[in-house]
Length: 267
Image (tube, rainbow, N blue to C red):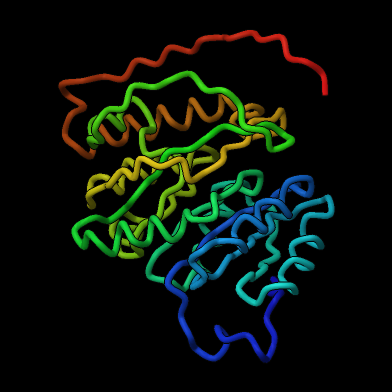
């Protein structure tokens, strides 16, 4: 395991702890990684570390991450062995030092005020353990896509049992992560859904109704290529939540899988 991006002038090597640890796990994301990292570097809130955990990429992702880390001492690169998306996320957390933690997928983008606004939301409400924002959809070229209007409903832990309402950017307190047990690597997909279910049982969530995250849709995205696996893991996460909450004797989960066909213009 190697670290990149640190040098003698790096203030964090002198024992200075940043306020935010932003985690990005990488597996063969060379095409989108630089845009993701630069969306972090342009944040209006500057007191962060950006941990790039490479999950055994076989393309040029690791070399690109190391090059980007040389340009900004706040970027830290960890080269790991292939563990899969959940295992990589769990290991990446071992390198996070800040009291506030967030995740950025390696093919997505943060709006430049995302950290500033979410940090302020938690600072202004000490009883909140996690803040989540709205998002926009973008395509492979970074163009904003139209999205069907969604009804805005107040957040409730019960709603998480049937939909991931705390989507997409989340900033949470380290003590919340520890209290709910962190990342469960018995899952192979949907670690965010399982984490949010458990976190909502130990902390209060706050919704920041601002589109501060750009969620990229493209054929190689996990949400596209591993959809059935995500559904199965989500089902297991909900069923475990029903047991933890003492609801399993009264309720059972039913999952309907719908196939939607679309004709897309070739790029």
